[in-house]
Length: 110
Image (tube, rainbow, N blue to C red):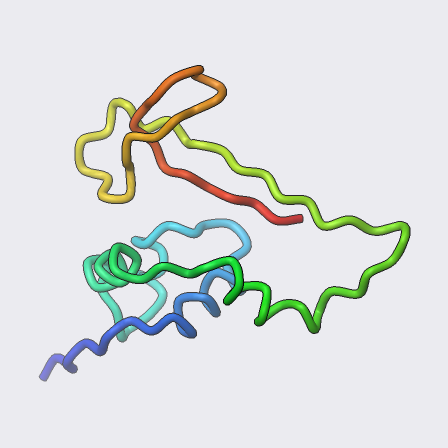
């Protein structure tokens, strides 16, 4: 008997992102969990919005301010103009392309 799949939770998805050092794709997430399929994770991401305040509340105890260390954020749009089946690709402005393209927005924190 095939076990019934459960609903994706924010905690489980965020733990995956923290543990994954190389591949953050939904297909990789689905391949490494027995509980969730790619479509379940995709539906979760489409319906849930993780606000900056929520992220800050979860990491502020780990940040130790000093005069010699910095927290750097950078955003980019990964060009997916020729993709037709990537659900996360949306039309958005790309500074690199100097216009609106179909792509996936990524924010990096170092």
